[in-house]
Length: 230
Image 1 (cartoon, rainbow, N blue to C red):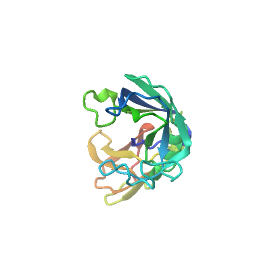
Image 2 (image 1 turned 135 degrees about the vertical axis):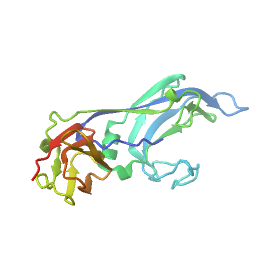
Image 3 (image 1 turned 30 degrees about the horizontal axis):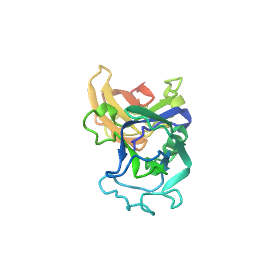
Image 4 (image 1 turned 60 degrees about the vertical axis):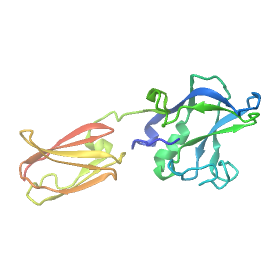
């Protein structure tokens, strides 16, 4: 399973909890229920795609393994409960911080069952579970918001703040986050234009001399900057 993460400062993350719902146990037909073994969750190190993933692909070793480098052995989280119709919680704070620092390494998580005999396991509700969408996996993040909405203190920089002419190029950069939106308004509140980005920077060309208010919306909240005309 894999989650898309918001663009937040990893140093602001206080906790991350991954919850999965154990629906029922599984035993291979014609075999008696055997003993329960060890159950662990790992961070995945190999890129995969939900539409094409198989038991032997794209893993370096069929089924994926720590020894082959498909799974991070240092991230192992153990939960040996075999209860069903319950939520299982995993503290993935350190893993999520790693993924926030380098989103290119966010390949999600995998369960690994060891010494479950014979062919015994647990069914979990995944993203495809349709009977009750509320039972699908969930990732809960708790993080600190900036104590100030002062644009300078959270890394907002804008060029050409005092030169407002038609065809004036403006560049907006917001530190500590990648995703944000810029909306332009006249002093009377009329909406003039809107731009969004996932790269941390927006560049645009002014098309109106009436633009005097710029609103930036990000995970830090809403920032409003009044722009003085030339």
